[in-house]
Amino acid sequence: MQEQTATRLSAKHSIIVGITLFSMLFGAGNLILAPMVGAQAGTAVAPAMVGFIVSAVGLPILTIAAVAKIGTATELGNLIHPLFSKVFMALVYLAIGPFLAIPRTASTSFQMLLPLLGISQERVALVQLLFTLVFFATAFVLALHPTKLNKLMGMFSGPALIILITMLVGKTLMFPPAAPEATQIAAYSSNPAVTGFIRGYETMDMLATLAFGVVVAMNIQSLGLENPRDISGQVIRSGVIAGAVMAVVYLGMSYIGVTVGPLVGATVNGASIIALAANIQYGVAGSALVAAIFLIACLNVCVGLVSSISEYFVTTELGAHLNYKQIALCIVLSSVVFANFGLTAILAYSVPVLSALYPVTIILMVLGLAGGSKPSTAFAWRLTVAVCIVISTSIAIRNGFAPKVWIPFDVLPLADVSLAWLIPSIVTFVLCWMYSVAAGKKG
Picture 1 (tube, rainbow, N blue to C red):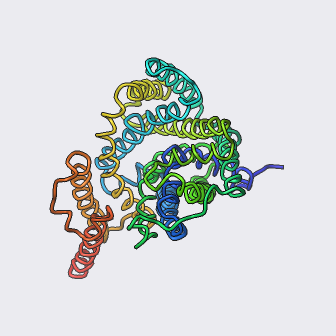
Picture 2 (picture 1 turned 30 degrees about the vertical axis):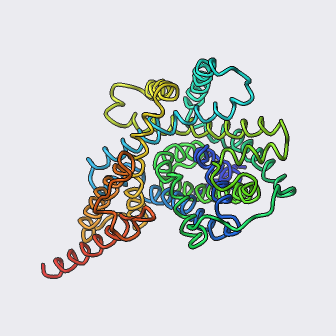
Picture 3 (picture 1 turned 90 degrees about the vertical axis):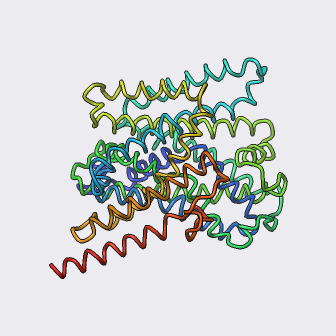
């Protein structure tokens, strides 16, 4: 008896693919943000986490649905213009890959492992180099089989990560270190839901879902589905499963922040909050627990990124000169260099790029969910994207290189919550759409 029907995977395989996608998305950045929200929001954590989950879980899952509905991320970008799609997707893959996220997976893992090593300061650089070589060699080998990630992450490393997080959250639930306190941060006191939404926005997972869609589809196909419509539907279902798992994990991690926050203050970063919680609950063994959580989470994300980015570039002009394995090797080798010698410098350039790309991704998500552009709206979508690019890029460059400099876009509505692009984009689309409709009637 087959484990899946002709049109969808079985419940077992749907869960496996969902956990695979969760594992590819849930890295170090995801781990530390929710505890920070909990520590900073205090007793206002409930509305803060509602806002956080809407942006950190809801928007990425909607992006998966949008891409699945259109076909691929490249085809989604083509609805604006083929040249735009090439440039935009290349920037997305490079920014979340070898220029930012991939090097950080190794450097973050090493920093969490460092307390266990007991090495002198002068040997840290050498040990970090050796660690990153082993880390990326492992990621490279695992990424050579992208259609088997459902077996690796969905059945082994993903469940292992969930179990380790459950060990920490579960014991914190049974033995909370401290009682929640009222927030001392004005933003959470006055508008916790909006503040939580902005914090969730900082995960930048929407960009990752653009990249991961193709590998998730390949893994679904390897489990027996062949019809593109059926695969798209299954990608969406697995995305919902991944989102549900992620939301539960975020809630658990925020509880850690709420109960540990009073002991350390609201300004401590999420990694320190997690480390203290583990130490309180498990003593010296807590350091090993935290290191294992971060190592598995970072390796999962690294493998997912290397696989997805290699799959994308092998379909471009680069694929005429390099095969999948060669592209993957180039990615991990460049990541070794950045992780050890140039991460700080590369972050200065990559973070503004990510900040500029994210609003455009939101507009593309809406376009995909709307089923693509129609003759009456094609111009409206293109101009809306152009307006969004101008505003988001200008603000991202300012924030990255001259944060104290005033620019005219600072007077736009919602600029104080990093959404200056939103109202102008909506107004541009509505006006262009009305113009197109009026022009069509006259014609």
